[in-house]
Image 1 (cartoon, rainbow, N blue to C red):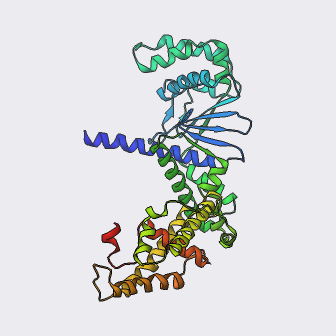
Image 2: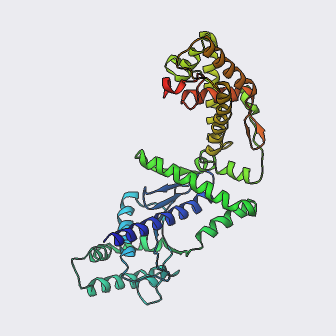
Image 3: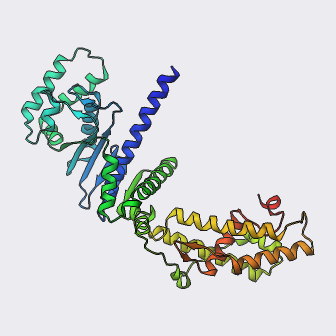
Length: 388
């Protein structure tokens, strides 16, 4: 029983991965002003600039060579859902896409009729009536779907059938995505890294949106900028990054800084309120600037994390060497002197480079102060006892 459940869970997981790959393929191909939704109207939906919608139902089978048959419950359930969705969306330009790795059956029947380029609604209607008539188990879920479709009036059925398209996509889907990246001039030796980076950004964003019970809708601008697609492509081509705008960047300064851990850590050093306030403002400006860079696609979340990791690494070495051989538990003059020495030395000597581009010293100071606010670092030897 455990093995059966494990197999079922694995099938579901593979299906979710397949859906993510399909979504990623469409995201990369989005035009400016377009949007992609996940589990809003359908598994995936694509909305064009003019408001036209494509509802994409994704079906995956782990069994190679599986066919989409005339009585495949995935097919009939999808038709059932689309007919209900058609009512809620209204009489607008809409395309229904059945995206699957299943092969379309070669048998005569409903699959051939509705996947044909030249659809004959009268033949399709007769075929649906025959399928319902011949279906033996009238209590099954499959029969419920077939009966529902057969009960649709001809005009509505034609509207749905005429706008159905089938996309059969076998296990070459990942290669198709990589081909799109190659078309965007991503170097051959960086394609795998870029693929995994953008897939990770997308799935993390989707997870967080679902966790917060938000609808997962991704615009062209959101994908290109906030999810870091443009920046990831730039990095793959060795395009540099510039932090020079920081000096001209204006930021609103925080209030109630007395509640910040960074404020209290600086207070431990017996700095003046004026100096502490300046430091906290520097931290706020740095964070706001880095956030704007991420929102505008100039910096990825991985690069932001790397900035903090390098800062923590620099602090770790200096902290260790400053207090080597000491074991302070209270703030006395000697402890205070060493803490101030550590703070000043880091602010002057710490270097952080991203993609061979150095951060300006004020940004490094703001980053270190942010780390003391989280808190990942501290100035006293026993800072963890006070703030963690």
